[in-house]
Length: 427
View 1 (tube, one colour):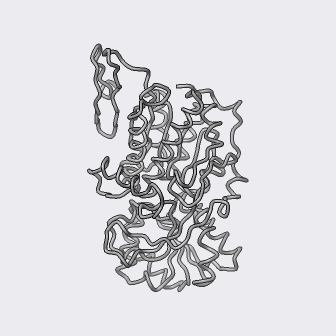
View 2 (cartoon, rainbow, N blue to C red):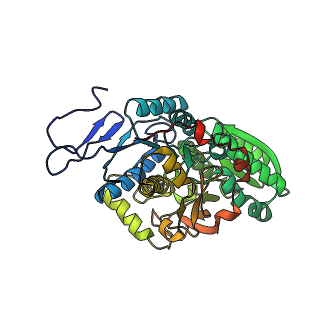
View 3 (cartoon, rainbow, N blue to C red):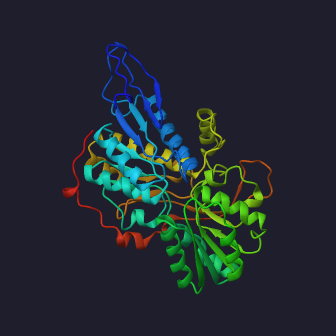
């Protein structure tokens, strides 16, 4: 750790040290030149490499924008907020090591970030062991708020079950009953496809097959040949990150995008940004879109563009939105609790509510105290073929209020640890 932190005694400094994959924001100083109040350190557990590197960068930027907003008005409880970022590499074992290091060596107050459900689960197990509050910003496997829930973990994204409830019944009626599943072969993919399978069956449809896609797949030719052999009415794809980009490109090349009805359970903005519209076939889910005609959206986009001029992604998407709102809500909860004590902050987050106007969605959002998942509007979209604006990619076709897509299965499977068995942690 000697090469991570540089101590400069007796001098007031504020800087950014970038050492390999680690980002450390230096301490603020008061006017007298002595160090200010002890900072609140947030550990950002976002991917910087692997399948979800682009999304990891986006969620990290969302976290940092929320931190910057609070620091601009004096921090929280009179304490400045710093962050440290270590790459979790889209790998559960790395996620576990990063969480352990951040808590025991970097002495972080809170952990924020994750795309892969396997990584999020690994981080949350370490966080629960120490009592450190962990915000899973972007992992959308139903298991994260189900069998893998924890008292310290809060899930901020919609999950596969939420999106399936918003899309499956209507798609069966419109497109047909023969469904084929294409599934990324890891936790999120399986959990999402299982949720789709259950709802298809309940609504009178039939699953004619399931094609498993290993993480890191770049050649989908064999998979797409099998798709044509099944001749389904609907293809439900639970494929994400760089895998999804490759699949979309090859589906388009083989002119299969219009041949079948494609349902992409969730479409993260970094996964499709920059793709030609021909590759953006089918219907897909999201929780937020920068093109919404809702109060506050234009101002939010402008703030993003001002603070992220170096980003290849020129407008914020759902992943950035989740990182921002998770962090902002955490800092607001600390203010409301008037302490960083984990039990007090957890109790605030368990009853957290955000108005539709503030959150720039169609419905009020709220934290489900039973399984620690943020309940929010679920949107379905298609490609916007009427515009050539590279950022106006989506056409929103429906919005479903949170009350209609509650994940009852996850609620039933979630067994939150009692406070008595959760270690007290007060950074």
